[in-house]
Amino acid sequence: MEDPQKAKAETQKTAIETAKAWGGKVFPAHKTSGREAGNELLLTSPIDSPLPSSILATLVFAQHARPFQATPMIFPPLLLFSTYLNLQGYKVDSAGTTAALSGVYLVLAGRRRNPFMSKFGVRGIIRGATMGLCLTNVIGGGLAYTFGSRSEEDE
Image 1 (cartoon, rainbow, N blue to C red):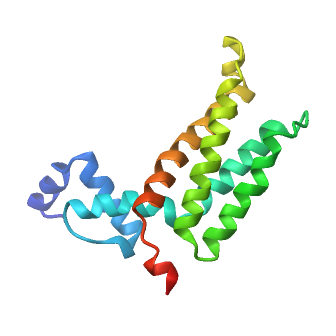
Image 2 (cartoon, rainbow, N blue to C red):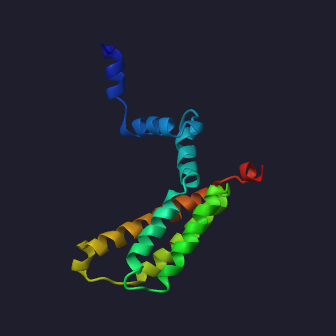
Image 3 (tube, rainbow, N blue to C red):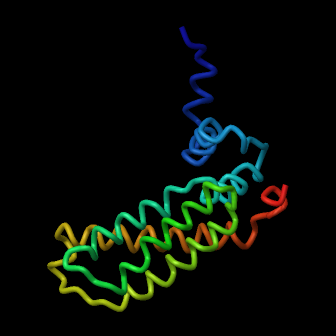
């Protein structure tokens, strides 16, 4: 049987506190106390994961493979190279590369105009997801590249 005081304290937590506690369980190496925990988790999560660039490469390929479009198909190999950099231990440089490539793709994809009704089809949903992930990569990777320390990579 659970203690009523403990249950009441659990229910009074905000959604942000719950998310931070969950993040501490998922990323145990990033446990610190107070406000620094949230900031450190936000800055290091985009660096630690090679998934954003891999998923973005998959989405870009899915959009432009059929019919084949040469210019956007430059991005998937470069994004996969960014994943390779991340897996080899160059996390800060990988974050910067992913942010730069995502920004360029976001600018190029934003120039194309689609009719209103095609935005809600399968291709429109994939395009929206791709552009959303690009924006997330630009912000997260840019912050990680700007504030990340290379001292851990140099060792």
